[in-house]
Structures are given as structure tokens and as C-alpha cells.
Image 1 (spheres, helix red, strand yellow):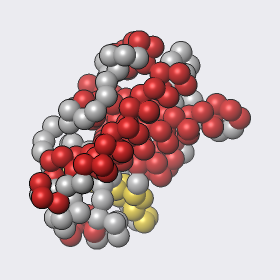
Image 2 (tube, one colour):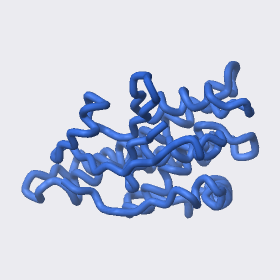
Image 3 (cartoon, helix red, strand yellow):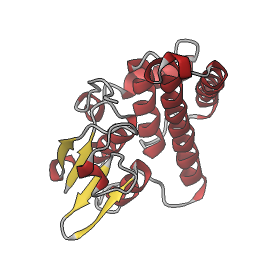
Image 4 (cartoon, rainbow, N blue to C red):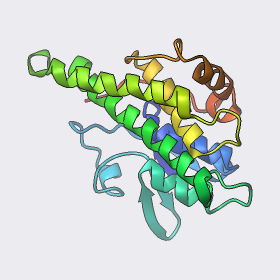
Length: 205
């Protein structure tokens, strides 16, 4: 399999960290691609009509795109404990945590558009501030709701890759005022799956 990837994407990193946690990273060739709404990458558009990474290319099968879907697919390929719980409240907690983390990443992207990427004359501070509030609310929610003692699941991976990207981009919020979340995060980012997938690079618009 091949993973169309971007070294500064929280979404792509989430899929790759998941592959490491599932024991599948050795079966995947990672291929870096720069993508942006303002910079068309024809190779990525050829595999994903949205022109976004991550995209998982499978031999003789259609490509799979979107980090959530790629993680679902990868979870079907290994014989270990599922990283996406199959049923019950454990499943819904993992998916809720994933949803909050991905929403925080989405809001982080929006804040970057209104602070760094959009021409200054076109920026809209109220939109920036609204998305910043979503990020801060996400930190507060995770401090209360994240299951910090259970087995690793997709929500944990989504949280760790999102929080590390928010810090990488110097976006609003931190774990400093969230003692429970900070302790868990400090331990999780030392896992081999995180250490082997460092963030790097700048967005190319």
C-alpha cells in the first residue's frame, strides 16, 4: 500500500500514527505531497476528488481517502485489539473523542487562514476568534472526558496528533491548564508511533 502524505498535516499524521499503532506501518510506502486549496496537486486529485491527503492507495483496489475512513480500513487488516472499539459505550466514546479532536484541527486550520494564510486585508477577526473559542472549548472538554487510563484507541491518536499540530503551529490553547490531559499527552507523544512521525514543513499556497 502507499499513503499520499503531508508532513505538516494533522489528518495525514493521524492515519500514519494509526498504522504504526496497528502494526501495519511496514506495509505502507509513505509518499509526501504538498496540497492546498490554492495549489492544485494533480497527482492527489487523480486519487481523491477533493485533492486532499491522506489518501491510501491499495493494489488493484480503489483508493481510500479521509483519515477517519483510512483508520477504519486499517483496523480491518490487523489481528490485534481493535483501535476502534466494535461496540458499546467504548466505541461511542472513542468516536466522540475523535470527533472533538478533528473539530479542533478544523478550527485550527480556520484560525490559520485568518491569521497567516489569507491576505491581511481579507482576514475576518470575528471568524478567527470564533474558531479559537472552539479550540479552547475542546481542551476543556478533553480534560474532563478523555479516558486517560484505558487501552489506546482512535480517539487517543486523533487527540495526540491534533494537539501536537496545534502546538506546532502556535495556535490558541495548550495543556498547561489541563493537568489530567497534560499528563496523558506528555506520555503519549513519547510512543514510537509519534516519535517516528514528526511534524515538519510549511504550508505552500
